[in-house]
Structures are given as structure tokens and as C-alpha cells.
Length: 109
Image (cartoon, rainbow, N blue to C red):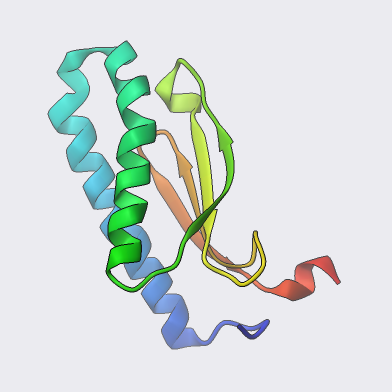
């Protein structure tokens, strides 16, 4: 992977972010009446299943970091698809939302 993202690739990252956020939003809406405890337990498994689904469709995301919390709003999970952990396309899940971004290897140079 190169250290600079091409404009077309950036558009794909934004489209991926929009798709994932739509799935997260729909899932939250259909489960919010089950209570906070259920949401916090459900969230981690749902994100893992969502990433597995993305990987089954051509992506290659691996977990970088996990910070669980009994309050689902504070739960964070990070994945990347680069050859090096923390590089490439990054997915930063924070509660039932995701921010997709791109990080080149030159960050650490």
C-alpha cells in the first residue's frame, strides 16, 4: 500500500463509512428498546460480525484495539486493513457509529 491515498480511493472510504454507519444506525434503532445493558453486550458481537461480513466481501480488516465499556456509547473498536497494524483504511467504531479514514506508513517515519 502506498503512503498517499488517491481521490477515487478516498471516495470509496467515505462510501464504506456511510454504508457501515447506516447498518449501525438501523441496528441501534431496532434494538434500543431492549435496554442499555443489552446494547453494550450486543454491540461488540455485532461489530465483529459486520467486519467479518466486510472481509467476506473482499476487505481484509483486522482488529487493532478494543476498549469495551458497560456504557455502549464509550465502547471503542478499531480495525485496519493495511499490511501493518494501524495503517491503510482504518475503521474506528465508537458506540453505534464509525469513522473511516486512511493512514499511511509515513505517519511513523
